[in-house]
Length: 132
Image (cartoon, rainbow, N blue to C red; front, side):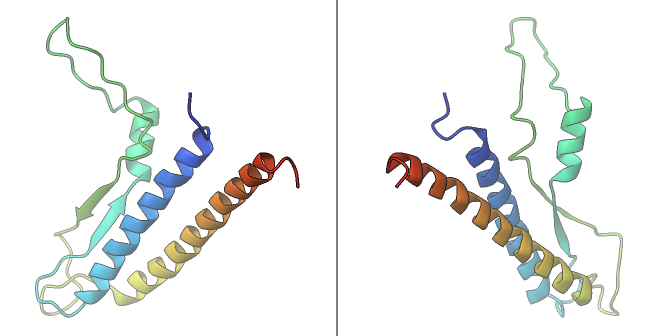
């Protein structure tokens, strides 16, 4: 039995994703002029879509092995690099306009998650106090 239910756990996973994405974007911005640096992105939706479509299957190599079941992809984040593109003459592929836009969107997303989790905790606090 989960103490707070799945909502808090899902919000926690989303906050972890948003935090990792913020770190990755900040790293890209910091390396905008670094020669041969390749921008990184955090993938979550692709992992979740594969999980939901059934493509993510663990292969059992022995009949006595325990079947693998994941948690629905909620903590499956991947930091990936695209080495096949170059935007600058020095081999760098960081697009500063895209990174700044992604950073602003991610900050709004993160703040929305924080507001939602605060609302959940305020509801719990009200219940604990007996509705006062």
